[in-house]
Picture 1 (cartoon, protein in one colour):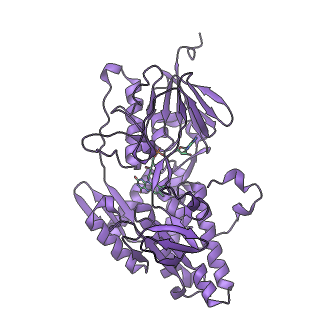
Picture 2 (cartoon, rainbow, N blue to C red):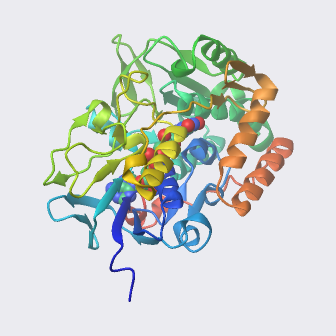
Amino acid sequence: MDNRISKKRIVVAGGGFAGLNFVKHIDKKLYDVTIIDRNNYHSFPPLFYQVASAGLQPDSICFPFRREVSRGKAKGSSFHIGEVKKIDASSGKVITEYEEIDYDILVLAMGSTNNFFGNDKLVDTVYTLKSAAQAMRCRDEILDRLERASIEKDAEKRRQMLTFTVVGGGPAGVEIAGALGEMKSYILKRNYPELCENEVTIRLIEGSGMLLSAMGEKAHNKALQYLAELKVAVSLNTILKNIDGETASLGDGSTLYAGMVIWTAGVKGHDVAIEGAEVTVGKGNRIVTDEYCQVPGTDDRPIYAIGDLGLMTTEGYPHGHPQLAQVAIQQGRMVARNLSRDPANRVKFKYRNKGSMATVGRNRAVAFIGRMCYTGFIAWLMWMGVHLLSLLGMRNKASVFIDWVWGYFTYGTSLRLLLYPARHPLAWKWGEK
Ligand SMILES: Cc1cc2nc3c(=O)[nH]c(=O)nc-3n(C[C@H](O)[C@H](O)[C@H](O)COP(=O)(O)OP(=O)(O)OC[C@H]3O[C@@H](n4cnc5c(N)ncnc54)[C@H](O)[C@@H]3O)c2cc1C
């Protein structure tokens, strides 16, 4: 007898940290598991900023699903490419642009996207870092500006081309601003001798009074110090309201030149169109769940929302858990283990905070592990170790390690190639806004 007939079908929408960890830990003897993702690879967002600043190649931080489902812990599951467009909860179907897939249990793990706080005009103006494709678009624009400025005779135009504005002082904003500061301070004179450091302006704009606010006062002070050392101008309590052409207007009514703006100021849960179930969408466009990550009222065909997309409020986290990789990983594992054991023994989600860290250029980082705070070179080594270990696959670990060591000693140009994928006539097929 084909035992697939008796197995329940689980569809996992999104193969990021949450979805992939779910797939790795669910008992494939009990369930038929299908993972759907709009990309055919899993990616590692904490290092997108390194792709954007030409420190790493995109394929070093992306990992093909086909390999994941053919060996290791995810073996036995299957992968379908497709963008989830709609869920029909009454008939138990996930609908993508290519097909409809039936499910008995649905795991929503599509993560989050950029939040422009209602100013959707920004979508067409700013550069973002929410996917490998977006990071590559950002990298190409930075490199293109450096090359064009190198041959520009008009000093004012050169200055404009070399003005970079980062919006958002969370880890992503601080890290990309630090990488640009590094480029200004060390790379420019080696690789672009036609340009002068003083012609480059790097600004970091943050709406609140703190950088790295989730990590506290000490991290804020260190980030300020490190960015100052890298000649990044930081404006706190400053809100970017709008961009008209190449002029940005700020909350206090002033304006500034902003040819290239990198937006890291906010995230919100991906929109999910669900019919046939009462789903509550809460703060940050996240789907409200109970403490098992299940969407309330979906007992016949359970729907779970995990990772950045899910919103579980608990006593310790009254506004939901932070949108971090560790939360996504732990939720994916917890839901998989609950579904693989006797329902009477299932456990509620309890987040174990393993620490947080951010880096600001080379040799500079802040790391909080338990009650200890590390800064400077030691924190930077810890940051590199944690990120290397967290990457999937030996090839990726080795290639990132080699690129880091090579870049550290040579400030090499090997990754600063302008391949212009966006100029290809079929770019709309690959890129995303
Ligand atoms: C630039 C940046 C830096 C970050 N740095 C850190 C850090 O240093 N430390 C940390 O802990 N966290 C960091 N984060 C946050 C962390 O990456 C997220 O919390 C984590 O990725 C959430 O995991 P997830 O599985 O919920 O979503 P994701 O990892 O985003 O995965 C979502 C998956 O769903 C797929 N998908 C999305 N929409 C659809 C659709 N409609 N149909 C099909 N597939 C879809 C995507 O392709 C993706 O594979 C960073 C995030 C960014 C963007």
